[in-house]
Image (cartoon, rainbow, N blue to C red; front, side, top):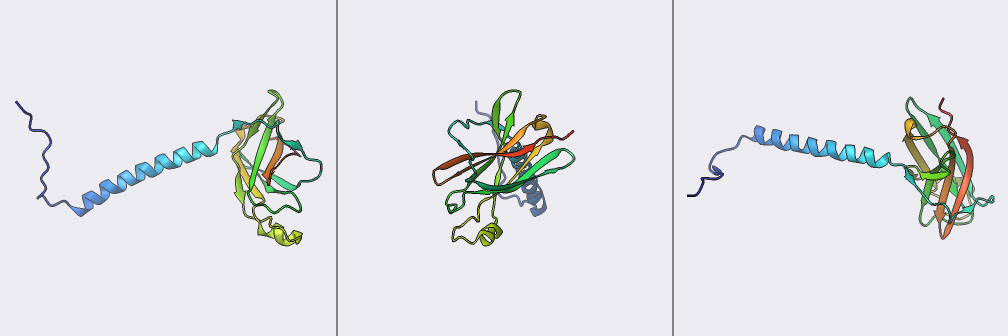
Length: 168
């Protein structure tokens, strides 16, 4: 004996308002899940191996500023090797945890800084030398030192910025 199963009444007229409310609810739920996943992804602090990096011997030009909020820290600035156009921008803010003797990559976004290219005026393109990193303060440890890692045109440089986390 067969069950009736699900039967659809295809001739029934559906109200536009109800359909739009259902589709709107589904869209809202998916959007919220996406934003939560994006927030989680952007707050990841992952260990990184800096063994292949060369220490900055003055070949890297950089500037970094630190801004504290109510529960976050924002690090932003620029970094470039003079005389080398930035063909592929990969700049990361690195946090050094002195207690564990480990380096951690903070979520870093590349920011276009056309003013740097205009200011330097040496014929090279430094438009994508800017960076910005925002991280929750409780994810950073006391006395953490901040570094800039600049990878461009086969160069991998780690520069000590002299900045230390002092949120107290």
